[in-house]
Image (cartoon, rainbow, N blue to C red; front, side, top):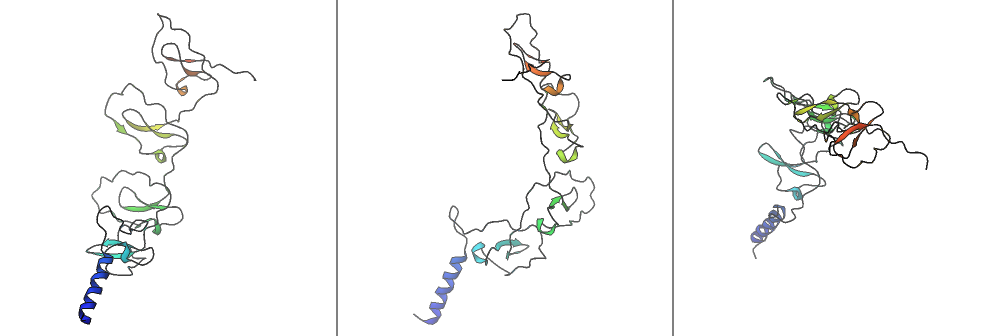
Length: 223
């Protein structure tokens, strides 16, 4: 075979090796995600690629405007970005970060309501929200908070059945509920409470023979 023909075949083999695999096949994709936005701190090592296999080391083949280039994957820091409502203003929103790598310490690059910025990750507060009331409140459903980070102290952003608002967390009081007695035909089967926090001090919300009510707990003696 002529040298020119051999060179052509070798070129086809190299190109075939760089083409992404068919759907359902292993395309040699590398771990990590392509960085968001324009990356200035990590310039592309190549101006063009076809798949992750075309890139050296841990670099991935990422879209950049009208081309694909080899870039180091974005390093996402642990934690979740706090939710922020979008600003109602139509003014342009400059972004002060591009991904987590451009933020100091444990901060993450998150949506701030108007562009991206470095903020501390959201941490859900301990304890649990009170039970969602069965009766729906009247009026429009409003979200007075989006997550626990918007609530003061130990309060949590809880579902009210019609939106969300900051509430004291549900806590189980010490003691045991008394054993339900046999149902009395004349007994009221109303749900007078749903959790201990709705009861006066020293009482628990307990299941009766029919319904729930606040009652003094049973105190267990030493075994």
